[in-house]
Structures are given as structure tokens and as C-alpha cells.
Length: 310
Image 1 (cartoon, rainbow, N blue to C red):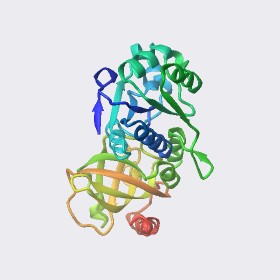
Image 2 (image 1 turned 120 degrees about the vertical axis):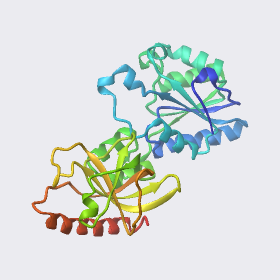
Image 3 (image 1 turned 30 degrees about the vertical axis):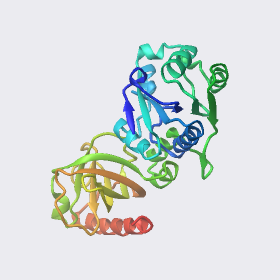
Image 4 (image 1 turned 90 degrees about the vertical axis):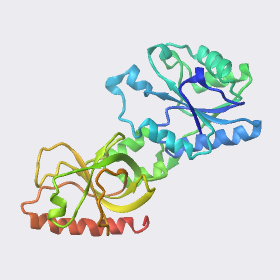
């Protein structure tokens, strides 16, 4: 997959272009990509994506900008598995935000990219003051000679699949339902760094992951997995996201992974942490013995949840 840093550098061949922010690359986004791939096959062109960096809300209304599910690097990695030939990462700034809807179509989509088709979600808007809508885009496509496909909402378990819905589920700790909407467990990347070593002292060593970006879910204990990115090997794990309330109440949030049935050194490794399912909220225990007893229960719960994901 080729990545272009903006439309002025892009060289696409008869593209059918999926347009959007695509934060999280959830099932709704994946449906758009499939439609673009099918459309490109019909016209003998490339299936392509245009996304925006930073997220437009971070420029237009930073105080209301949502926390992003994925970093740009992770988003591109996820898109690359969808049959897309090229991605245009459009720099979004005040100047680009001031481009009118008509000029965006005429100058960017038609004049520079030469689109043969455009695929957007039902709620897509574009251009200055977001005055461009799916209706104006359809009219512009008819006038300029490119096909426009507007994809209706995708639903799972009566929930509309959207980045906003996924964020809400993760804020509740509902990693399992979030995974259904994403089509995979939510994940974050980071390096394993040295910790206080308390886990090893009490018989449950953990990998302390310094998260490098991506949205963290509600603090608590989760069933999950840890991928060693240099080996592309994924190991089942119990995850603790919190302040380590028993030992250091009020400390900054930290993410620790106890890899099940593993005894090795993970320090310095680049990892990906996957959140499969909620176990419980973080608690403060009156004694180490009480904490150890609870950890044993947590590990049993993690094994039950991960039984279908082993």
C-alpha cells in the first residue's frame, strides 16, 4: 500500500476513493473499503483512501475534539489489510478547512486525484463550514462524471457502528462489545519498561507498558493479550490499568500485563496490548494476601474469557 502525504503528491490511477477520518477502522469503515475495492475492480482502477491528519476537530474545535482510538501509524496498518492500494493522508489545517465544498470537489477530487468514484458514510460532510453533504456530493459527482456511493449505517447488536460508539463502550469498560464493533479487540502499542517489581515479588510478574498512543479504556482489570511486535507473537494475558491502588494510591495511570503461563524477560520489547473483556474495577486491598487471593481469581476469570480467543 502506497501512502501519499497529501493530494498534491498523490499519483493515483482511476481511483475509487473512500473519504473519511476512519479513526479506529471499525466494521463500518471496513465496509466502505470493500465497496471501494469492488468499485475499483469495475472501472479497472485503484481502491484508495483519503484521510485527514490531524483529525479536523482538533483544528476546528480542539476543546471538543474526541480522544482518538488509533494513532495514524496504527490506522494505516489497519487500512493496509483491507485491499486498499493507496492512502492519501491530507494535512488538515486552517487553510484546508477554508476550502469550499465546490472547490474541494473540483480542485482536489477531480482536478488533482481524477476520481472515478467516491465512497462515503451516511453522515459525511466536507468543505468550509462543513457545508458539503452527501446530497451535494452526489450532485457534484453527476456534474463531474464520477460515481458516488453513500453507505448507510452499519449496526451490530442494535448499536450503530461508529467511532463515537466505540469510545463510549471503552469508557464503560465494555471491551467485549467494543471488539464486536471494531471487528477485533481494541489495542494500544508501547514499550515494556522497568517497574517497581512488586508483581514478581508476590508471584505474578507483569510487563509494564509505556503506552505510545491510542485510547485507553476505563481503568480496571481486563482479560487480554500481549503481542510481541518484533516476533508477531501474541500471548494471552491479564491486564491491569490503574494507579496500583494497594501500593501507590493516587499514582499516575499505568498499564501492566501478566502473561499467562510465561516466564521470560520482556523488558525493552515493543508490544501491542489487546483488551478482550472486562473483569472488574480496580480495588485497594488491606493486605498483600488479600491482593494475591484476588489476583488468582482474576487470572481464572481471564482464562475463562480468553477460552474462545486462545
